[in-house]
Amino acid sequence: MTAEATSPDQRYAAFRHRPFLSYWTARFLTTFATQIVSVAVGWQIYDLTRNPFDLGIVGIVQFLPSLLLVLVTGVVADRFGRRLIMTLASLVEGGCALVLLLLTLRGLTSPWPIFVMLAMFGIARAFYGPASSSLFANLVPQEDFANAIAWNSSAWQTATIVGPVAGGLLYGLSAEVAYATAAALMLVAALLVFTIPKPAQQTATDKPTMQTLFAGFGYIWSEKIVLGAISLDLFAVLLSGASALLPVYARDILELGPWGLGLLRSAPGIGAICVAVWLAGHPIRDHAGKIMLGFVALFGGFTVLFGVSTITWLSITALALLGATDMFSVYIRETLIQLWTPDEVRGRVNAVNQVFVGASNEVGEFRAGTMAALIGTVPAVVVGGIGAVAVAGLWAYLFPALRRVRHLNSRN
Image (cartoon, rainbow, N blue to C red; front, side, top):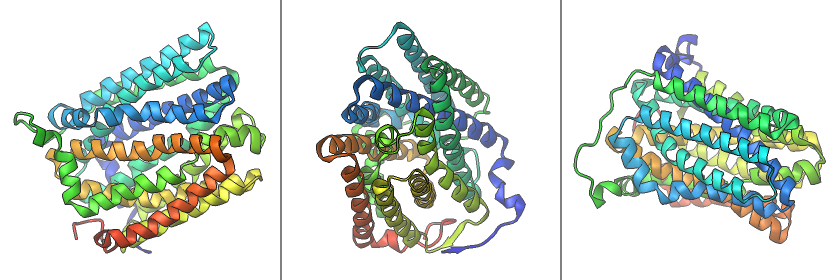
């Protein structure tokens, strides 16, 4: 890998832009709160049903809104203030956490009320995602894109480290405490986003047509580098995602409690944040396409290692390495998408990207839960990891332009 160290000032280049600091903090708090809800919901549902299939439903009900609303959310992000959309979506997510709190206080005997609230949560995320991914590109100049993406990813990854541990500890106190904390954090995040000065945005003003609604799909299909990068993540993570099955590993395989589940969920973030911080000071200078494909293959390999492990420290190590390798591909993919996409269609492209990411994560969780119910938890994880390795090799063949991408500071 070709990387060069940058000066300390350049390492924090994105934070020279104050609106980005507010955005970064808000995104951290939102993700932190989401992780708390995820741990609480996963443990609460598995306590109710003891059925891994229900853990898969958690993912699918959150993904479906992004899929069904993809033609709407992207257009909204391109035509209206992205800052306002993020604020409203954060408030709705906080409201969902409050309803989960009230449902828990009343006593739950079925997971279906939780699924309904998760669907509402998914609708809010469907609007939040394209607006969030598009807004930060308006907060920094192009020369700071790669640095901003590294730190933007670090906000998410840092939250995935401390959020699940906090979620496990809070759930250990009570589910009510966990949901109340998440709701409060969502409110603070909404206020932070609302205080960001209105940025310059190339807003679409023409009358919506079928062509404008499908502009995101059209652009991605015509730009094979973007298509290859997005679809690589879709199929690799869809096949190898194992996060939905972590409650099974925590309770039945590794015999850990709620705190242990939080630790397992945090481990990928630990590896990822270390890489994100390193990339902020050592940006990738050359052979970006080959590096991304190679690390996707390693991601699948570490998934297999986690799947077969029955030793706690080895499982946590495998998850940390899994997160580290995934961070390289995330960094390269997100930089390519922002660099190759004009601002006037960025919302629609990011809406499609969110569907692909959601498919890889939420549908991947459904895939994992369904396969675990059919063939067992360990085989489901191992087969998925092998599939991710195969996808990396196949995409290197199908998308030669992606494989040949070298630099991330300009189109090449």
